[in-house]
Amino acid sequence: MLIGLITLALVLGSGAIAQGQLPSLPASGNSAFSTPNGVRRHGEYETASIRSPLDRKELFEVTSPTIFNRDSVPEGLLPVEVRAEEVNERLWRVFYRIYTSQQVPTVTIATLSNQPIVQISDDQSSRPIRLVTVTEPDADFNSKTLDELAQEWQTILQDEVIRFRQLGTPEVIIQRIWQALQILLGLLLVSAVIWFLRRRLTRRQQTLESLYQTQLAAITASTSLETSAEEVPPKPTAPPERMAGEEPEASAMANMRSQFLTTVQHQFSVQRQLDVNRFLKWALFWVFILMWYVGIARIVAIVPLLMRWSLYVWATPLAFIALWFGISLAIRISSSLIDRLTLSWKTSPYLPLGESQRIALRTTTISNALKGLTTSVLVIVGIIWTLSLFNIPTGSILAGGAVIGLAVSFGSQSLVKDLVNGCLILIEDQFAVGDVVQIGEKSGLVENLNLRVTQLRNSEGQLITIPNSNITDVSNLTRLWSRVDFSIVVAYENDPKQVFSVLRQVCEQLYSEPEWRDRMPERPTVLGIDDLSHTGMLVRVWLKTAPMQQWIVGREFRLRVRQAFETNNIQIGKPQSINYNTSLEDATFHN
Image (cartoon, rainbow, N blue to C red; front, side, top):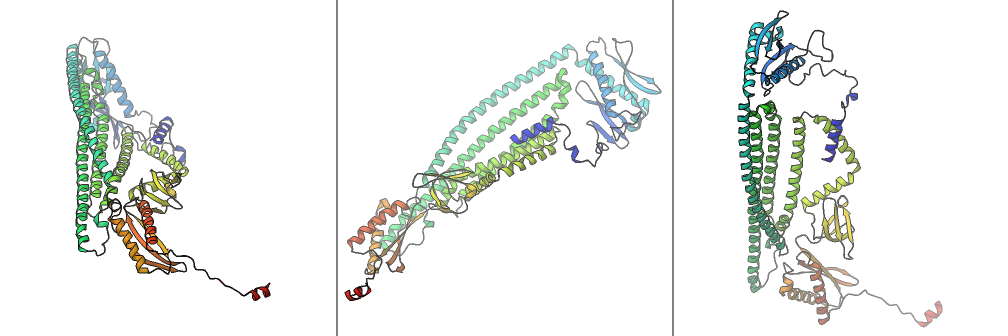
């Protein structure tokens, strides 16, 4: 926007733009087929309107031969716009004198150089004022004789003089001003009602926003619960009493998902009420604008001193209001569509509970970003159309803005890459604030994330800032669930079956305690022997945990394994060593 405003100021403050870029064309090459504003070309003739000084209403048209090149007007020809301007100026002078006249001026027809002229006489001058000369092009274009066209113009001008005289009387002026005051009073009363309604809607909006934030906080709190049963792999066969004990857990998971979807639906219901509330405020705003516009246009149309601007009031301002009403309506429709798409994304039945919870938390950010993007695009389009509406050369502004934007883009390539990659990270949900990630050789807790940089806090408390453009490979250690990859080397002297039995006992004991079971969505799995080496047998155990719980669960499990191995006399693997002994004689000989 700043670049656009600067470019606009440069364009309006300069002269002709970029004419030196087309040296092969003559300076008047385009004027051969162009016409000034208000001039209409009809083959060999051009016409321009004669308008009433009272309300700019078109009275009739004057005609002149077509002039293709106005930089070189043939001798004896008068451009039609110059002729129309002269007639309009004479009408202004005559109608201004009507205010001081005691009688209604008379419009007559006279002859000058064998051409009829329409003139007006009043009591303030001894010589009639010539208004317009009826020429052969006028008669030819209107398919009438000179006398017939002169009488027609005389009638039109006489009626206009009478109308202007009637509207200029003090009684009519006072009556019209009183009507204008009544309209203005009505506008003020309706504006007070609209202000009251908008105030009530604002209070209701604050209540709904508070409820919406409460429900959003409930969704945020639910992300710390267990993941859904759909994410849990098939469990190993267990005794009947254990399997029976799992049914309440599956039922609890189903209830959690049902409660989450219910909360999302309630949140969307509140969001819809907010949308309806905002729509009503928006509608009241535009009713206010339209009401004042129609009221002012009506006042301008009935007050004689203001009637001259009535044509302008109903022209460009009406198009301006209609344009921005359409832009505003398009913004609201796009925002509503984005909200519906995000709702269908959040409540998809094919997503697990944990994924739905993460999506529910970031859809607000994504939807706001999309709404901001669509709003920016529509506003820019509206600004361009507005400039075209006021006859400002948008092509030159767009060209200048493109050049400046290209220059800025070359100087900020890394910034653009950061923003683009930041958008992709946000949309794809590669990681979020609160996740523990590893980006290249750096790892830590995501403390801050925006479209430009990502900030990590490592185990030493260092804050690491990484530009988003440098993020290529990301390892998310806390996405939906985590895992403790426990491996230990035991000596060959131990019985493998005894080692497996001890590890399973430790796993079952840890999983059976409520404190630790809440942190583990499923039982730990003893995988077996993964490697044999000179140090011993490598035994591996997997413990699936809730996000961010793998470290505390891992530390507790290692402590219990250490105590269990000591109790069952299980030896840890050690590197094998071989000692070579030689006799004393061999040692003496070598010495």
